[in-house]
Length: 165
Image (cartoon, rainbow, N blue to C red):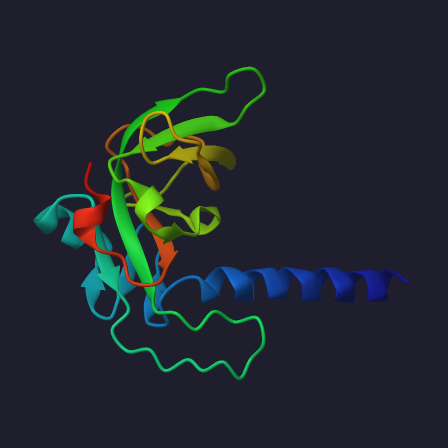
C-alpha cells in the first residue's frame, strides 16, 4: 500500500512539474537567481532595458498532436516590484508590479523571483498589474520586496508597449 501511494504521489508531482515547465519558452534555463533564454540573462536584460520588458520565444515547433497542450508561442514578462502589502484579513500578501498584465495571458502561478535568491519560504501572493483591478495568484518568496525583479511566463506573443502604464 505504501509503495502504491508513493507511486501515485510521485506521478502527480512529476505531472505538475511538467505543466509548470510547459508555461515557459522551450529554451528557458533556470538558475537559483536568473532565467536564461537562449544565451540571454533576464537579469542582465533588465539592467540594460529597464522594466517592464518581454522576451518572446523565437522558434515555435510545437504541434497539436498532444492533447491539452497549448501550441501558442510563449513569452516572459520581466517586471519590477513597486510595492508589497502584508496579509490583510486572512487574504494573501499582495505584490504590485510595474507592468499591466491585463493586456496579456500571464501564468502568474509560475512566476519567479530573479536577480537574487529568496531566503524565505514561498508564500501565496496576489499579483496586481494595475491599481483597482483584481489580482492573480502566485507563489513567491515571503521576503519579496520593492525593486525585486519578477519573471512571469505568458501564453502568446506579448507587446512591451501594451504592458507599460
